[in-house]
Amino acid sequence: MNLSAHDSDILRPSLENLLSKIDPVVASILDKALDGKAISVDDCVELFETKGIDLNALIIVADELRRTTVGDVVTYVINRNINFTNICINRCGFCAFSRSYGDKDSYFLPIEEVVRMAKEAWELGATEVCIQAGLPPNMDGNTYIDICKAVKKEVPDIHIHAFSPEEVVYGALRLGTTMEDYLKMLKEVGVGSLPGTAAEILDDEIREMISPNRIRTKDWIRVIKAAHRLGIPTTSTIMYGHIENSLHKAKHIAIIRNIQKETHGITEFVPLSFVHSETPIYKKGLVKKIRRGATGAEVVKMYAVSRLMLNDDIKNIQVSWVKEGKKFAQFCLNVGANDFGGTLINESISRAAGAIHGQLLHPEEFRNMIRDIGRIPAQRSTTYDILRIYD
Ligand code: SF4
Image (tube, rainbow, N blue to C red; front, side):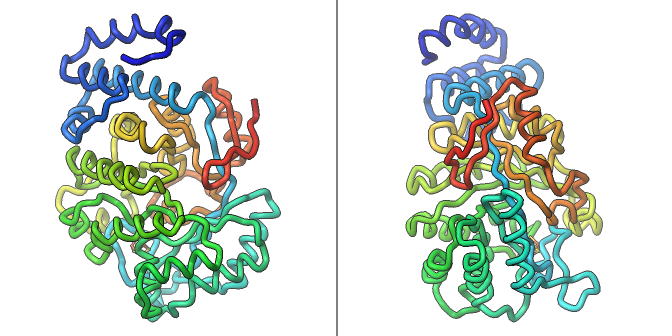
């Protein structure tokens, strides 16, 4: 183990004692992680299978790595989600948000409304708007460009975190240009970062089953790397708890890690557990053995294993209070995560899928929950500049 002198005095005997009592294979992986050595895909699978005291040891080691890597500050961003249309040609099986053109509850917000929402968010203290939506048929390829221009004209200093790799590919297709040129255009009109959504599980067999019309794994990687080459940072995500197994999850995290080693353009990793209840794939039984989301233990393991796998490359692991609820998200800050995500005024996509958690978490509530676990709240920008520490 490679702990600082002070930490080592306090923790080393108890950690060594703990590791001596657990499964020796798990103990050797945890020891490797504490020594700052890379965890392999096979190691990752082993950790995803832990139970009992082995799982408890994994949690303690993940939290220790979090503490030594990023300290006790827990960050959050004040932001607003703007899902400007739910009309989508893809109709992914896990998505309860999308509608077909002409459906009575379909909508397409005019640009003026998107701008009004961005302005309102800015006036309420938001530093970011996260703009993502469905893929409307026959969409004008300039739609994303025009939205950004209009938002930036009215609210020049707000950070536009917008357009998933899927939307980037679609926008380029609709405009008849290359994906790279489309990204350049987005950057010129003010896109500051891309959400690394549309990743789900980066395995084409799984994608074929849960979202056959989605971009393929290689396309997702291509867009993310192209964005990084152009100086556009991205987040990274995984959606799990449906039909994938531990190996799929391990390989997915390894793909994210490899991208980061090459480009250094990923700001954070955001595990998103599958919210099943209203999704077509679950309600209509479209895929055999579809699960009802991840269990609590699986969610905990995802955060802990992510910390062990990504600690050297992506230091920010974000909990999702929208998926997990604020109390469980607060707990998961003790298992390797260090970021509480966004206040998310108007989150529509998870709610449509059946998530029962609210549309807005007030910054003060974030701060109280962070202090409640003995940590230090800090408001951050989208790209993790600390804007204010509340110590
Ligand atoms: S996840 Fe996105 S692309 Fe898939 S159906 Fe929903 S809105 Fe459309």
